[in-house]
Length: 293
Length: 293
Image (tube, rainbow over all chains, first blue to last red; front, side, top):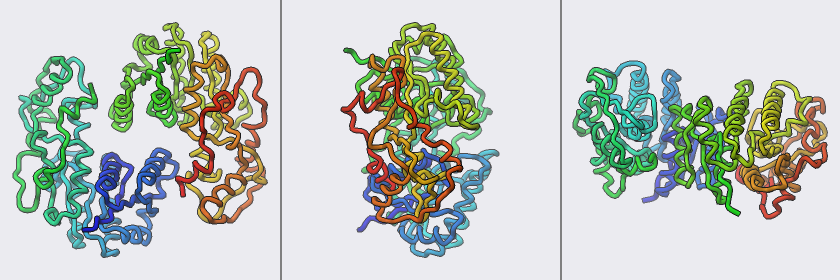
């Protein structure tokens, strides 16, 4: 089978840049949307030029130019959006409505992967603000996709490793603690940690796969389903240093999200990525943490 | 001669990241300051970790922690600062005063290269606001360095290529124009364009060189001293497309900077980089522009 042509929207972002690299690595003809809104952002421009040097093709179009967007989308078999939802209240994710409209009008796209990659928003109806708005915006885009009958896959990647693993689940830092670590609740709640490059690898793996059509793909690497205590133990072993544990009562923030990513079975409308693609050597969290030593 | 140990301050910035790579490439033991102020900036953190993976050592210290800064500086023979001066009125460059103090106190540093890399501020006394403040701040740091008797080199790199060359010297864009190009004055004023990686290469070349001690090193690659008309002609040749020329009278902004970088001879207190290091194969501007095709 010929490899599908992939158009990445949001290709300079945290996940987007990895999607571009994974698409190229897996041999897909890869297009990256270059929005004129990039303006004088030299870092984004140089990242786009580096993708071009690696074999991607830059396609210029603004999300405010429907005809240009339709022309861009018409060149691709698959559209992957990784537009940032990180800036809470920027309502950036809303802009994907224009992309949905363009895909509908172009009519040729065989698969659309909207910007998700986090927790499954359909299971986050009880989430609190300010995070809540992101889940609501993702659900709104899902409804637009489904109303337009656009073939799709939603990707749920659980916890991005860099944000939760090396800091041993500590708030307000991305670095390993040096002396003390706050343990939330009893520290035995399971969470799923995923290397960000692995997210991109599994996403690109899924785009031509009939098993993931109109489904949610969950990335649940068996060896990366860990409690906070287990993550702490891995770091202590790697660093050769025992940390002082400061216990924080279970009604604190992190504990309130108790099991939110592990407390459901994947049903008929979902599929698990590491089972679908056992050939991928995913990154284990002790490997991941080594760079922080 | 043993290679000097280089500490880079501002290593995640536009020039700083290139200085780190050049230092590693030229075989220097390379330290990069990691300021806790990086906070939750995942992009900066991941860049620092990538330097570490390439062999650099990360040294943690805040510019607000004099003792920590002295300890960091004490580990290096040479300190290169590439702190950003891009955000006009952020007065970020002022923070280098603390670095000067720490270098003075540590007493072991054989060379300090402050954040300059642009036009020679000692020749920009007639510059207009808002650019003016940056030159003034650089001069203030020079005075502090010289009063503290710190061995130093100032690097003047003229025009960063990415900002002025591919856009054919057009304002408010970084990309080549597609139809029309504004020609400032008669288009025959010379300017000097320098590849950003070359700036880093020459900077690192100069740090152990007695010929550059307490001098300004100017980077004037002979083949990159070009008029706007010549830059336009190079792009037209590369792209195979002739642009419509729109002439803008000589009293406009760019023309007011007439010859500001080429209208002086380098005297005893300066040295020219491409003559000092003829072994470096610097990037010519037609090579540079190819990636934009």
